[in-house]
Image (cartoon, rainbow, N blue to C red; front, side, top):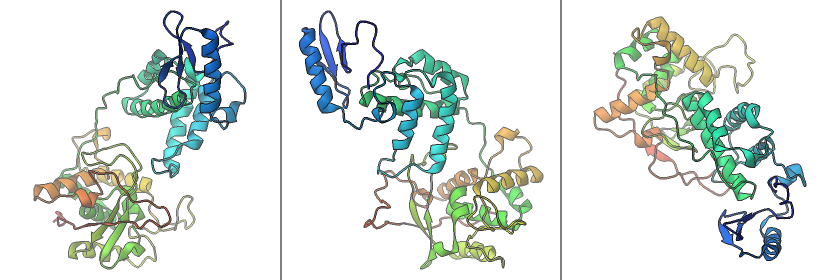
Length: 373
């Protein structure tokens, strides 16, 4: 689709631009590269029209939304972008990711959602990013960069104003767990939360993976974990950027003891579970399921009750996620690598959920014993 033309330039087809002097150049709508078209305007116009017919698909991204309109708004383009966004392997984005993107875009729409996308300037993007917290600004910057890249590939924009902005420095306030502090929390925790803490320490898994563990995941002496990466917060040096890991953890005597404690007489498909007053709760697969948000809230509440870190402010209090960092540290301390156990890799995962592809599980051994007295 065409960007709005200045008065007197409506006869110039899209992707054709005046260069220095009387010269013209054509911008390839797919690669974004410019090609010289000489100084004869009529020949340049004719050639550009032919190239557009060949290179711009009939089912153009924005054409499906706006028909023959000359003004492609940032809002309309971004909405279509989200509909077509896929992971590198072609799978659709997770609902949490889409909801996060939609939330970011809603804030941006309030600033310049109805403006033509090719009129968004570097100054406008910087002004918006400067108004929001550093971590949110960096996430929005990445999203905007992707959107403008797609717009460039469609011949709608020439520049990507988001990409040339600077990343903001994020000062992490949340501290790491100490063994002493986590021991206090564990001693004050309800049995189900204590089980979750022990599983996190031994397996180094994230809270969502702890909550998703089922008895049916235990096969042939191994606990099978299909990891989910749901947040970009609290990154550590091993964190993977996207996708999921497939880890098969060998059940040793220590892990078996924790699993035995999880069998508390409540009939639940989940290893970490608790009895609830209300058996029908929205968002739960089973009435005994512990959702990640509830796990985090219960952990922080227990930490405050135990007065585990009296010297820290509320924002500095380590969360359930930081158990993962402590477990990895303890592995390193005794010379054990937690890389495979934690699901981290120096190479991109090659397994797919596609039919005909077998999942290749990464076997991992637990390297530490529970350090609690």
